[in-house]
Image (cartoon, rainbow, N blue to C red; front, side, top):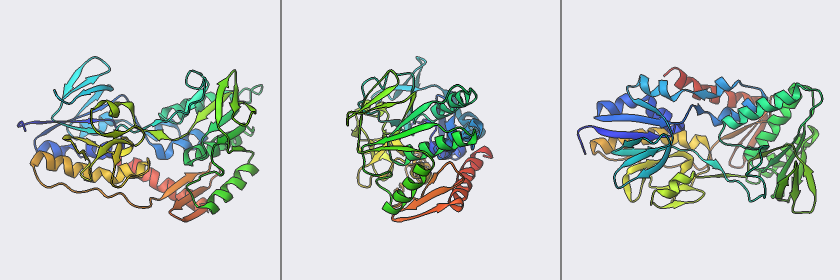
Length: 374
């Protein structure tokens, strides 16, 4: 390698926040460290709480520029649109190019949009990612709530953790204003949270129905036109706004690298967090696919990968041994139910109530605090 190693971090995700905050370690080892991101880091753990009115947008985001510049690195506000691995060049949306010797990708994920006719082109459709979309949705709904003549009808596509948490916090937002939204949740599964303990699913379903949520289970949406969803059971559902939470997929950029990848899981990586056929390219978080031990697209995995990534980038620069990343078998997941309660789950265990939400808030605030003070 050259005397100065050009390390470029693409994406301000959970793992790259850690690396950016400790960039001085890499710089002392002979690297120039650059972080590229089109904007702020939005924290997924507080996103639904922000939608429900628990947090302001400023509480849910961080400025990655200040983080890396405090550590001696550089920040480029831009978006990577193509990667030339032969010339080791990044092509940016601005038209600029940036060379690299080492590359780390922490690109997050996108909503895997379902094949619903008319959905992608409709202005009233809100995918759960990027997270700043949820802040815009809240602003739109609060504007509607302030108008006594408007009470929007909402439909949520997806009955997994994200869809359920969105439903809970949309209910919470309407409850704050003392006005009940007409909210429907549509899922092809036979129960909410199909991967969760059945007891947790039953408990939450009863609670949400009491709060006014309408459930449409074992059905798929086929089309969305003129404020109505057509379902595959022949019925139509009025929906002024449609929120999409039908699962996550890797960004399209990872499929254009000429490296092994899975269209949903992401770029194939080894336990050392680099790609099998190009050890100059590292990937972590939702955009990466650890073939031998696949992990869910949850922020906690990116957080756990962060120290291993930092160690291995340093090891690549210093030509020293790598560490291996081994994902935890069962991660703790806590849903914000939008009513002052949380639902915590880990493996087959679950517990719900105010203490669960207190635990979640402590974890979330702790994560954000460490980088605000870095």
